[in-house]
Image (tube, rainbow, N blue to C red; front, top):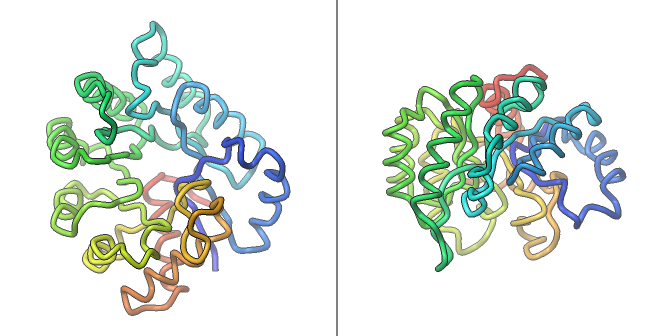
Length: 259
């Protein structure tokens, strides 16, 4: 089997002691490709370096919703666009979107730069990786208004209902399914996975976060994708091999790459 982890954060300090060994273990365990996801300007530059150093690594550029004040500074948008224009292994803008989980948030600023970063993706011809937490309606409304279906992309760590999945399917978006699907109390997500066509599902870990059962609460990595694939296969009534092959092809379509 071959696995494509479409969303991970290997720049995290939790990998500082064994990052290189972990990467060596990937090829021996079927992990053939990983997209490392940016959350700010600094990690966008880190991804530029990673994609040039590791032949299995792709990357994104972008600023997380709660850090979008960083994009208010002069030249930040140009900086992101230049990274995309000069490195074809930087394959998306993300993770971008809306996060209303915390009390102290600036919703207007988040909305402004959700739209603004979608504009970057449109200009550079790459998809978007969307983070949406406790902000379902505003996410859908903004994506519709900005014609996100013309840009394309993935709903990272999808956690909304199967009914809401229809809105994102109408925009032809992919759905990133990670370790949460293995949790016993993830009934809503399991129902959504059953509903979403396999043609629109991609595997992700969000490493180092959200490790699947039986590793819940521990550091996550792409080596644990097998547990996610197995649970999707169980829900869909197919084999893990079928899940792996379909999600590999989907990931390549999502990021417009040939591996």
